[in-house]
Image 1: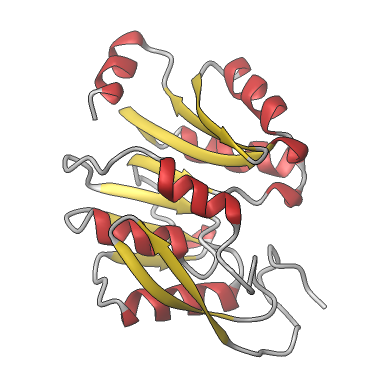
Image 2: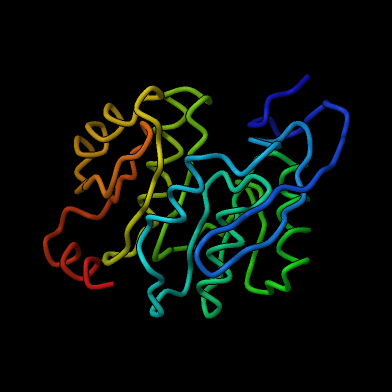
Length: 209
C-alpha cells in the first residue's frame, strides 16, 4: 500500500465524490483511495481557500504545490481565469483526478504536471499550498526552497500548516532563509503563512496585490 506522496500508488481504486464549497465556487470533486484526504476536502485546505488573499488580476502564473485531486487548483483557476494555474503533484492517480476535476469544470487554464515536468525557467506570481508535511523536514525544505526561488520579485506564497505538524518551526525556518513571513490567520490549530521576498520594495509591491 503506497502513500499519497508516492508517485505510483498500489492501493485499489475506489472513486467517490466530495463537496468543495468556497467563495465563488460550489461543486463536487472526484477523489479516490491513495490520495490525500479522499473522504472530504480537508480542513486546512478549506481554511486556506476561505482566508487566503483575494485574486490579483495582474497574476499570470500561479502554482499549487502538492495539488492532490485539485481543490486549491480548481478554486484558483475559477478565481483567476486570466492566469495559468500549475497543479504540481507527484502522485499519478491524484494528477489524473486533478485533470478530470478541472475538465469537469471547464477550466482550460489548468496545467497538471509532475514535478519533473515543470519548465526549467518558469517564474510564478503566487504559490498556494497545503504542503506535503509528511514527506519529512529535509525534503519539505528542499521542495519549498525550490519553489520560493521561482517567485517573481513582487510574488508571494500562501501556505497552510497545522501547528502540530510544525507550522511555527517552518515559520522560523523561512525567516532564516531570508523571507518575510506574516501569519495571516490561525484557526483550529492551522496557520496560514504569507511569504514574500525580503527586499522592502518587493514586499510593498506584493502587499498591494
